[in-house]
Image 1: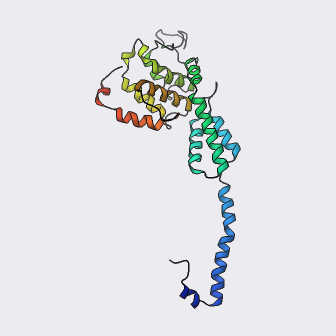
Image 2: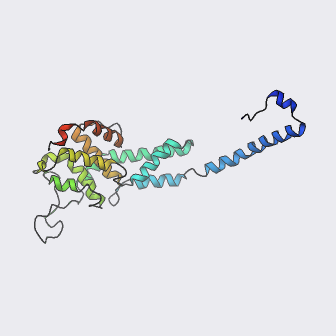
Length: 240
């Protein structure tokens, strides 16, 4: 359907018809500022962007909200307003700086989390101490990646970190290396883990064990694809 008349059609129209046509277009032009203002109202406020950045950060009592990070990434890709886009990019860069910091891994290593596997009946949890940074129980640490069993992010974050040293475990043969990789990959997927720190520790451990070269700080998708390519027959039967 043509929205603009041909010259012949225009010449054939009566004066009232021409006036009506021009009025319609003037009305549409008059609506443009209003429509733009409506779409602008859906843009996030700067304070909201900063709050999401803060929620995605981790500290001693909070493991970093994965969904807040994903929202910032989505906004960076879809919002074109220059000042907001600049602010969003700045918040994301701050997150990358915090999570790539080597001090982060050192702090996670020392978290007071993951009780030693209880071997005695009627004993209080952690009465036998916590798993050491080296020489830990491989199966016990691997089990602590399960969010359905262990709700504290500190336990899951430390478990994801410690597994990069699984070769020091006296019972490392009790788990298959494929299971270690599978769990690390599972923790990297947003539907399985809500803590950005836990996912990041799993990513770094996977890279350490497989020599995968990270393309970026939060290269979850790259690692997931890498594991899909590494899934070969030998992993189905090989233990660490």
